[in-house]
Length: 250
Image 1 (cartoon, one colour):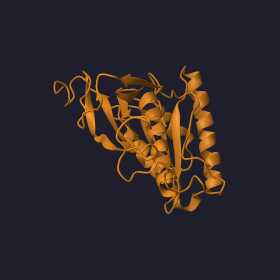
Image 2 (cartoon, rainbow, N blue to C red; image 1 turned 90 degrees about the horizontal axis):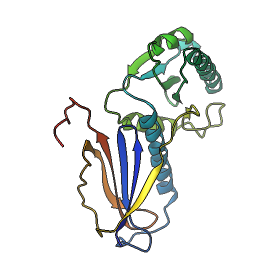
Image 3 (cartoon, rainbow, N blue to C red; image 1 turned 120 degrees about the vertical axis):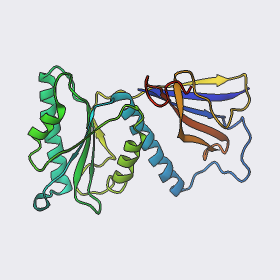
Image 4 (cartoon, helix red, strand yellow; image 1 turned 135 degrees about the vertical axis):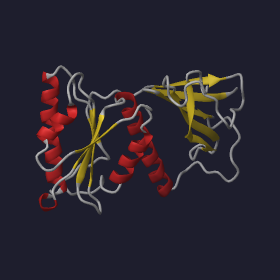
């Protein structure tokens, strides 16, 4: 018997994990099946990061606004007040989007641990309209700062940043968001597909991309599963955009 290969397509990316069951594969010497609390915390953070990364990659595209909403120095709210502020603006945006024939999609995080409180939003652009203009009109507390998603379709750095920052505050009982991030209910969560690769007992340490994709080398990892003690591999393939630096490189 070979190994399990799980693929998850999210927008322009395909995340791949190759693994064995507890009964198959060589167990690493000295490995253990029960993770420590510290290891579990790290695993939980990695899982949260992966879930958010898949949501962003699957639901947002090049040109969608990445917005930072700030407050003047003398008008900074409490976490509870900030939560009410962001809830209010998202509600107003949802109504405007519907009038323009589009459903609002968003991911929101609020940062405030050891820094001035502010919000980060990723929202979908509106066909033939300017979403940034709508945000500027609705945000009454300061000047919004705008960036726009690039054409890679791989937004893992944003997801990692969001989870890292909110991991300091999502457990605080201060009236703020009791979660790492919030998002609209209409976001699509990609479904994973698992197959058994019977023709090979072992995978190559240096994975090869399928046609039309390249391997994001920063995502390649060969290691030991902390629960099974068996080897596993994970990596992400990113679709090649015509005319990009990867076009024609295979």
